[in-house]
Length: 212
Image: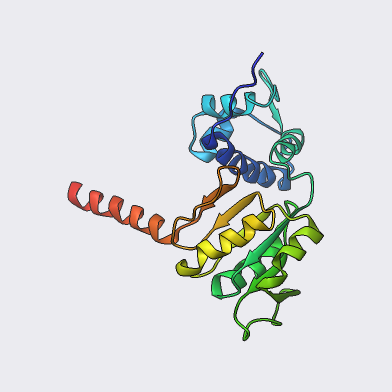
């Protein structure tokens, strides 16, 4: 029997579910129905049930989902039940902001090293992380067994940095640079482009103005 292929859309929705479930847990709410989840997340309850059913039967008819149990299972699915070290390349304003945010991450994904090519930035301390020269990247990745890299460098440097990450054994990249990077098919890349997202929002604002 073949295991069904999980779409990227499903995987992207799981962290959204997890975030809301964590909020419920903080409020000592122990059970939740797919209807409640759908209402709070502005999502189709049937879609939520279908998403979760890809990974097992977590709910009980007439009762709903056990919140602590579902949190545990989604964390396992997303591999957040283990420490996931991350490296960041680019100690500019965005890179610094992400390193500072690192202190508040609670899902075992930790930025363990930050790198930059600028002699001015090398040696700086950002949230207990010392900015290291880019030539130490491969050694640090091997030392910490890092599998994810974050790129926060200017567009012109992004491809070169991506190449270095691939050569150093990275398996996944989160790219904040406003450019499409090319990597082997075996490397997973997610692009976080603020400009693209803002331009998309602008379209909807214009559409609304025309309707009005």
